Image (cartoon, rainbow, N blue to C red; front, side, top):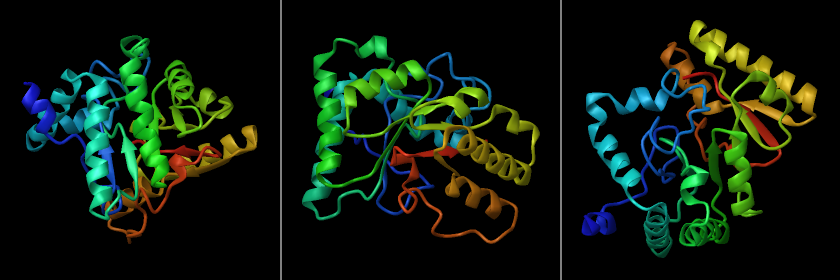
Length: 249
């Protein structure tokens, strides 16, 4: 098992990213790392639906392996793999944490000095090479924990669980409205725009609708898809002064 942990790759890719962008995941969606306070867990979580598909069994196996690994080891292997890319002259242009699952639960890593040092070392590596990073977490308490751990190295983005929380949160926040499941894709885009406008009106902060999700919806509707609407071309999720609405997908 130790050999598998030390040799199997940790970083991955995902479809909404620009070429060369990578993902770093600590476990399965809806699994041990996902807080029960997340309104999408067990219901509207797109990643949970994806991971049970027969054609995604390889991904599921990888995520289960990560969940069984010490979180510090996930960070350590990711550091090595990113360093290799840097040495090859191909540092990732974008990193998204938790395309599946979430960061470890605070109670599982609180007091774990090795995880804290490895997590910060990973973020320091990204900062050194000017790699924009998106790190979402699903509750305010989790955001508070990881913001204290990361400091100014990266934006920890809270995934608001209610509209009111999205409208009133003080820090970087995002929202995917669970009630979107009753709406068509076109209605979800329009609704997301209205939510972004209301967030700006009530907070004074800039808020946008995710271009990558919108482009994917337009493609599925048979409309022209903007090929540049990819994570990495858009770096809003890595920017502390911008808030983001994701049409439910």
